[in-house]
Image 1 (tube, one colour):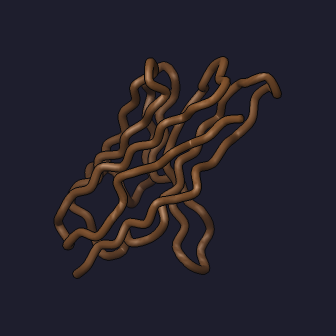
Image 2 (spheres, rainbow, N blue to C red):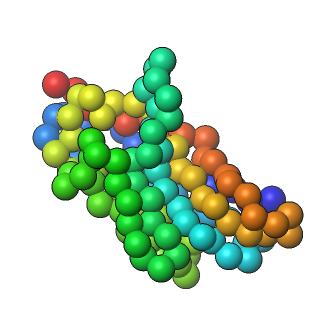
Length: 119
């Protein structure tokens, strides 16, 4: 069984910072990429940031220059440093990993962590 455990969400004032962490555990052969998505009520889930095993990063347009994703391959962990937070960043953030285990390649999701930015 693969589990993604997220931490670091919470309440912060506009302009503040938060750091999210996501650790993948279980029987994992390889991880192709890990990332963060978010989904506001009534909207589609959108990419926040993703990092692949080679270190290449990708960001959603709304978070570029404010958020930074990094990873620790040895720990199967990804981090999301969120700076200059805005009220519109308020929503649930989900960790995702595309990885290989006994079942082959598949996409896994964490249960989500709430980020709330007050005006």
